[in-house]
Image (cartoon, rainbow, N blue to C red; front, top):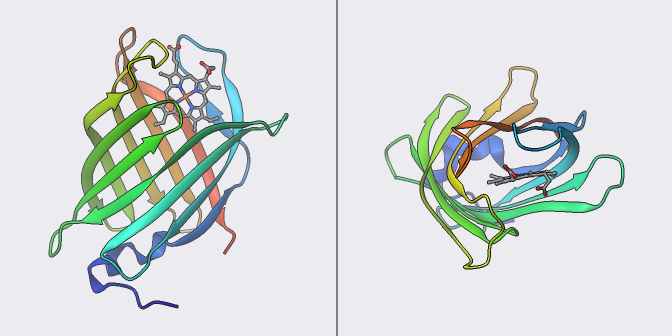
Length: 162
Ligand code: HEM
């Protein structure tokens, strides 16, 4: 296996595969609450970049739903982190924020979408990843749309599967 680029040492705890524990909870004022499962893969090829894929499924039907993939960069010598993300819904985003201990706090800096993306359009995203003391990883995602202010859409907990 390729040696980890030293720029990524602070994020080594994220690498690997994570599977949702209990199904995650999805909600928003304009939709019916739902449950989902999700697998996260974080890998590297020796570059100062983490590659990731997130694949989410309906909790009971197991139907594939949301998918995201992208890259994570750290500004060398700082705790500044950038996520570069493409979503299957036709949305692309840059999120930036800070790594504090084993918590990542991110805010969207730029969002763009296909000309025919479904409405309402997302206007802002914020998310938190946190490695808990019990070794579980937690992700919380909030969003603002054309119709709603910034509000929680997703909350889920994962255990490491490899
Ligand atoms: C609905 C965005 C991740 C499942 C929505 C809506 C938006 C949205 C804008 C429509 C809200 C409305 O009608 O007012 C996003 C963004 C995500 C994300 C930006 C990631 C950052 C996920 C994930 C799942 C999911 C991981 C897991 C399965 C759903 C479902 C609905 C929904 C089931 C309601 C039905 C539908 O409109 O398709 N999401 N979503 N979303 N989202 Fe997400």
